[in-house]
Length: 174
Image (cartoon, rainbow, N blue to C red; front, side):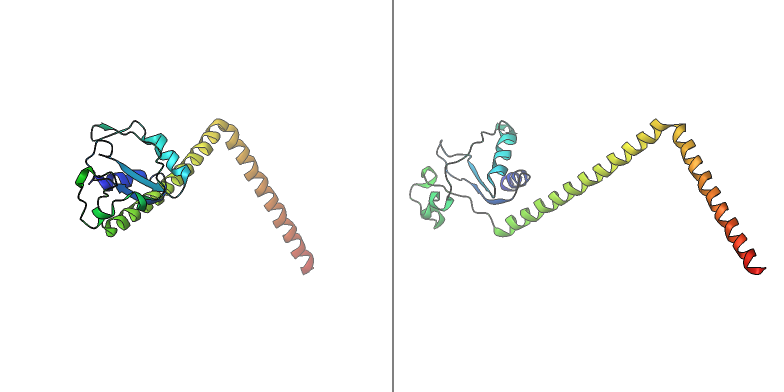
């Protein structure tokens, strides 16, 4: 389903406020899709990544639209199923999409975002583990010798504490 494909791809760049797939037949409007992002930066990222990509064998030509209020650009007659100009109307004939589908796509996009964040965090943890492992390997035997010295020192200190404790216990008994 075209709408779901486009919605899933665009939602990777950020939250979509609206997505309109045009149903007009005029050469200047056929195949147009209008996406309204919450943030202009998200729209800019989408524009840069999608420009020149292919969908179903056709190249995507992406640009910013001067339209800011899609309600004004829509054909009200088409929305009421009475547009006399048909597909060649110069106002947008937006394909209707059930709200339950849009909610479902929003939920999927949020889940994908959470999964991506989790995978990134897991990758970061794994990278830290690898760096630590590499540092240990670079230290080689020296690291083992240092650790052995520390263990010996700790046990020697522990032995001294025990002997002092034993001495103080002996003093108390006399």
